[in-house]
Length: 423
Ligand code: SAM
Ligand code: DTB
Ligand code: SF4
Image (cartoon, rainbow, N blue to C red):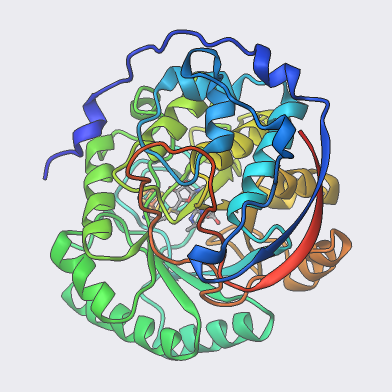
């Protein structure tokens, strides 16, 4: 398949919708007691609206945000204009609404801990202008061969013993073409790590449908392949593989029944339209990625972006919150660059719907927030690590059609709590 059907099509503008009914309801305060069970038929919405305050919006006066807040599941019919309207919501409101959506579809007290290992470092033929591992840039990084199974198992055990439930292995490859022995060795690593009870993710560059199926059969949980940025900005970041080639790999991964992990990188010199474009691509895929990593550029000396100024935090927060609203069931993963955020900024990201982090000694080539530091961070915010496969691990399927708010498919574990919401 050369490209996904959605990829060449951009949304047609929707009539701008009135925001009046949203503001009319913004001062109500309610208390709701909800019991969550794994049986979807017993699920209750986290936020109950008292009967006399039930909104009865007609489609003509409903804002994009209101409609998103009422949705019972993901949809992939977003237009850029709709995403822009959400993205441009006053930031405090945006974070608040993202948090509300987050609480409807996820256990807000749980953060997934994931640990990375570079299994084949450097010497990559691609020219990604942010990357330390491209052989086209003079970063001083020494290329190395595929690591041994023993070293993978040691690293995975250490990660598991420190609370990580997902182990992600990265190789600096353009694709898997002609890498028969590499694929065989990596399948063995996958099977062994999966056997330790961990979710396993790999990122190996482009894969064919047959390779994706082989990886799935070896026990792989998820495959990471980012679209990185908007379709328009992409050619100024990478020239050696196209946006559609990326989408093709994502499609192969999805078709093989693997969970798709696909997100982006902020701070490349892009505009806010590119954040909207990135989210547009991801949220209009046939099914939303199970996991959406949000990286911020770690400037690497010797790369074309080595001198880039850090991106403003509020843009990162805005992107996370918008991602949470347009892809309500996906796991939003705070990825590269998290180490530059203090505890309070990370807390805001969790409030806005981020619910996974990379933790451990290293990312792939750069530093990572350590396990002890992260345990303290989560504890200080009253958060705790997610168990393996605690969430629904499949790629979120789309709601058949947009529906009125009703009991939604929530997270797996049974629990109950009192929630006090202002809407
Ligand atoms: N070759 C694989 C690929 O391109 O799919 C390897 C994974 S690559 C390292 C995964 C992602 O990490 C990239 O798509 C990019 O979003 C992110 N990344 C790489 N270098 C980064 C950097 N210096 N700062 C922030 N994110 C980075
Ligand atoms: C993703 O989106 N970010 C991770 C993971 N997927 C593989 C990798 C980040 C790499 C950061 C730069 C480095 O350590 O070289
Ligand atoms: Fe190679 Fe991946 Fe780095 Fe691009 S991001 S240069 S494909 S390792």
